Length: 411
Image (cartoon, rainbow, N blue to C red; front, side):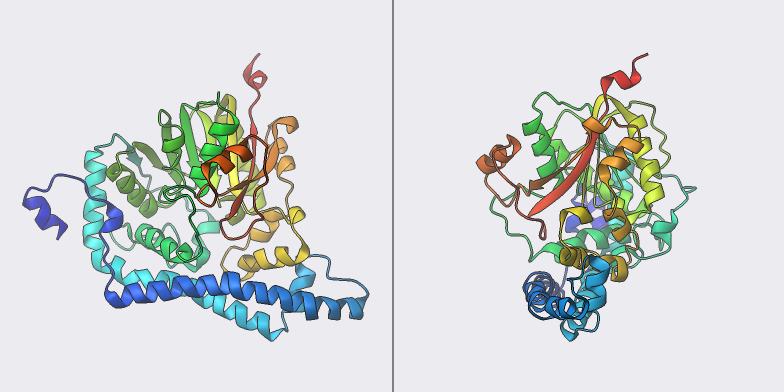
């Protein structure tokens, strides 16, 4: 279809997101899966907490003389409970169904998807770039498991110039969160939009020239920084070629120049001090803690004096109670994210200071999702006049970060 349109004189680069077309039955299935996830993650999760508070915790207190003190203790107490076992099975199956529900439309459209990605790479009408390195070593954290239970993970290629897993990720994540989001501020919100505007409002004199996103996949949490900092050059790195091809085509169709490259975050080929802002979203909990330390040290090297690094992640275990830690750590056992719990147990200020950042510049903050509150409320929060909602399915985000002191590079 796309090749025929090009032969007929079609010149504009189409949105790669719009190419897969779901059938009536596929749309119905995707809507069902979205609402099933919402039912499991919100409604049943509240009921499960009630079961814990009213029955499991009192039973354990009577048996041992104290309530379960950490996530592992709560998990041990909950594992025999039929409510939890049923909930866990539903959640696992809903996760798998998320990706399966979009695979059909992606597979049918794959030739056209590849054609559009190839043309984007050849023409780059927006001025972005795509650097791929077939010799890139895929880290074991990525290659050994299908993270999030997504078939093929982020890197698998089934044919030349493949973009299949990028398309599955793009369309599957819409199903994943479709019924969870309650947008009060339409067209706004999400990790990058919220973080970018928080930085802009909190630090009005901060105007980064270059922004780097670590583990960018298809660029969903990179492109929104263009709204907050339209003059900045955007860069994204990932180990997966298919997601980078897809992300490049996506950015080019939107007219946003992004420089994508296939690299491992532990060893990047940019020169010292090249970036003013380095970000990531849901990245560090998917890698081992030793890798985290290396990547943060690399981040320090790459930041210009006065530069800022900020990362959206799950709340540290020290910030929430034992039950919520148990709930969050489900992914470590069942969602192919084995490093999840170990990362959450880390003191993030210690991680940053160990990477070279001065401890007084390091910190942790929870910010509201910009799409869930009004602009005036978000501005008030950035000024320190309000609190973010509790962490629960995209209502707020935990950020940790630091700035690189200007004295660091002064002889």
